[in-house]
Length: 132
Image (cartoon, rainbow, N blue to C red; front, top):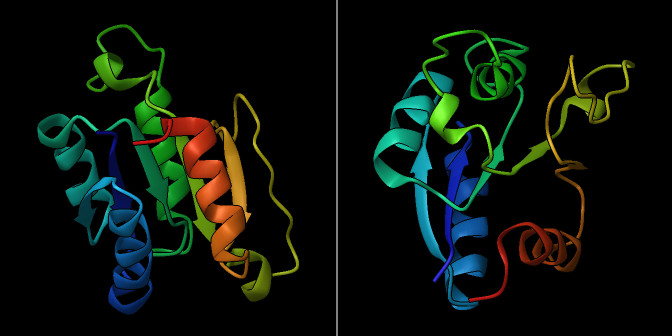
């Protein structure tokens, strides 16, 4: 059964995603901050990470993604570099800046707005983590 780790400080939104994914048979773990999420990656060993951008800081999620994808010698999270990351955020509603996956700047597989339909989110989860 695929395990999803969601790193997001919005408890209500996270709960709604959790209900949807657990109803489809996924295991679900949650972290409320980037730091907590990075620690949970080590213990939960998820098959997919759903990551928000704007948490404690406006760009916290970007820093988490870059930490997880770091190729620096001795990188702390090198063992988890292959876990797919689905960035799910409302940053496009909060700023005029536009972001998309980028190997160096934004190393994630998928970038979705939180306004995406539940069906679109589930389709991306299934694509990245597999079906339970």
